[in-house]
Length: 272
Image (cartoon, rainbow, N blue to C red; front, side, top):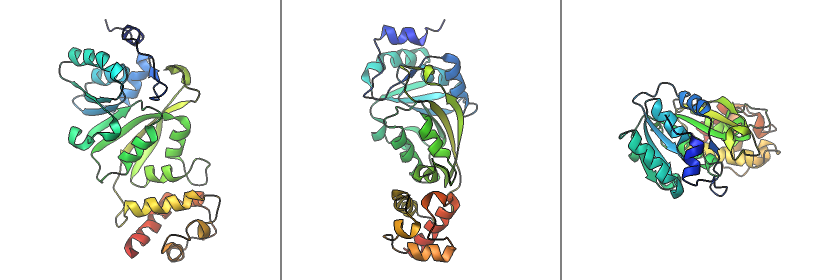
């Protein structure tokens, strides 16, 4: 019989660390549902960040995955070591900071990333995965975020959540909110609702330099209440790009679609 995760946490004296942004999920059925989001994992390689006491890790292993888990909190390592022994070589635990791991070297190409991300580094990790070389090394991302962050990732133009993160997540990938998660599912319960986002990579639009798109959206959304003619006036060639593409300079950043940002970035890339 599998030891309940609550008992594992108690036995190892693992209290969730607020400083590390930890919130543990104890509900095994919920963890199994999260592990199922990427699709069949039998024999697949999975990269997990912040496994904590190993609840989601066990669900991934039971789904047949080969898991590499990166854990910064050394208090959790004994519980994860027990899982390593139980699953006979299908779990590899790396003690370290996920922001400093050379993930492609560790995982190769085609691995799935599945994680209940620590909330204090979740967005930074997501952006690092979205901004890397393309085609990317990961096959899909299945990530837990605060609900507001999840809504920003999938937001459409002319909505309150639409911004730089929306464009970053959508210009060469396809995100969706796969599951809402109530705060009561966590220990300790966070003050905000959460959601699991699933992202799959798509083809990168031709002729677009990612760095140009990033600078463009930083300028546009950095002053989102202003018209484009004001927010983009400091970016060389931006006014010419708006005119060439027939985009009204009196529009505001949140009204410009992902495709329009891509076209603007393509024009500016070609002029660079």
